[in-house]
Image 1 (cartoon, rainbow, N blue to C red):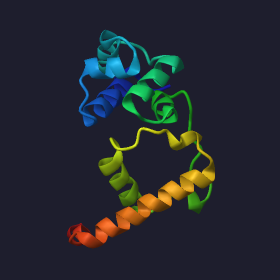
Image 2 (cartoon, one colour):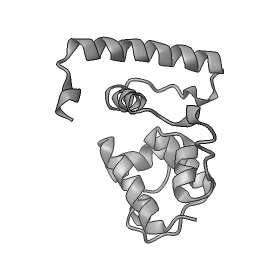
Image 3 (cartoon, helix red, strand yellow):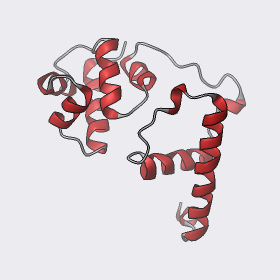
Image 4 (cartoon, rainbow, N blue to C red):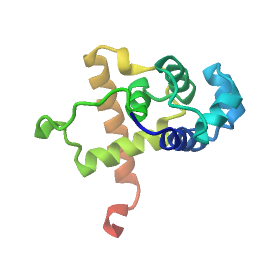
Length: 141
């Protein structure tokens, strides 16, 4: 199980990256602002899965991500080379997160695989077009 301080710091980082106050997150997640504050400061134990589900909803992040961060689950990864994310794929996913996190409110995690694949293809098309329009920033790296 993860420690309460690191989990709290993670929640705070997510909340601040979205520009939410503690009170806003409390409203979005339908939980107590005081409880969130104590979690963020590491003054409470890791929350229960039910509470984490509310935080995930309020923060608009996958429930599984918070459960993993809390130490409740361990993701199976890198079973084969196709599971690894290439630098270009990471750049694409970062672009999606930076540019579209406030655009989509629908949780595609429960959608059929075909719908997810089509959405990712559409987003990749937009990303590729945006890359062609801007100066190549990769040369600076």
